[in-house]
Amino acid sequence: MDSPKDKIQSEPSSTTQETPTPLSLSEFLETSPSDIFRDISNLFKYPAGLNNLAVLNTTEISLHCSNEICEGVRQFRPEGTNHVSEGWDYEFVKYVCKNCGKTLKIFALALIRNGKDTSGRASKLGEIPPFGPPTPSRVISLVGKDRELFLKGRRAELRGLGIGAFAYYRRVVEEQKGRIIGEIGKVAQRLGAPKETLELFSKAQTETQFSSAIDMIKSAIPEALRIDGHNPLTLLHAALSEGLHAHTDEQCLELATSIRVVLTDLAERISTALKEEAQLKSAVTRLLTRKSS
Image 1 (spheres, one colour):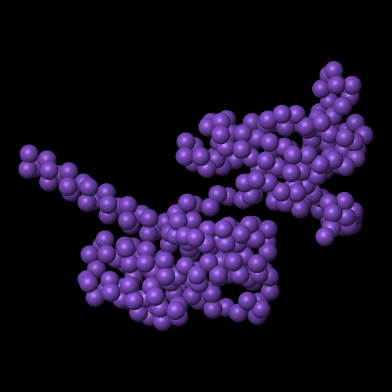
Image 2 (image 1 turned 30 degrees about the vertical axis):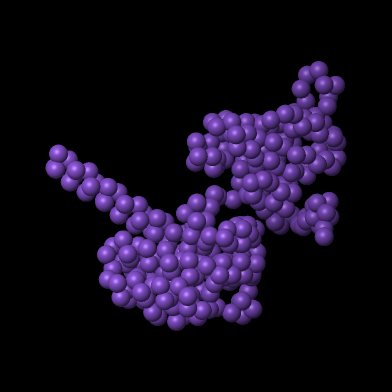
């Protein structure tokens, strides 16, 4: 495995390539994935009284906080001070959400400092929680016990690893197809589907062949769950039927992204349909109770 030093030394030095504009440290931490070296302006500072020792120039950054108090983008403040040696250095940088004071974000960084410069180069070796936009809790709920497989697929997708992302997502859908069909059946039940239709959903849940399961219930998919008029299960099956080794990594990445987008949209539609029906029933009950009193 290449070390960070090997990676930076092997980077092309051709003057014909466009040099990316240097980022601030906050921009780098917020937007850059792992294993990419970037030029960072004002990466270091030299506080008075430290005998010209450099420290990492950390400032507040904006990140998604998954704490139930926040559930959105919040400001994170740096915790502690990172003293940086000249040349190569490796640092753990810790941030905490200013709003809830509980959510932590930790970056493992490889840094390069030349002399007394304030600018330098940096690469993420990793971060916890992982890089990337948050995964909606509704899709995590939909995939059930294969949550970790789905998140591995998401991380692979974010790093541009198409074959890996496609393989993870395909496994999730194949393993959880019964659960997904069951959730669709719940929506059909809430919307007043007849007993015969619900029995079809129950039978489709245990069907081993995905195509056969889809055929059983293709006419029973609630309109509220159709994506641009299309059966979401048919869309997923079409993507999963593509041969993994018949495509390039880039093509697999496109398929993987499509699978995730359809799964996520389906999860949102299921949740919304069930929630709206529950709210409607609650409203009707309140009105009937009010009328009778």
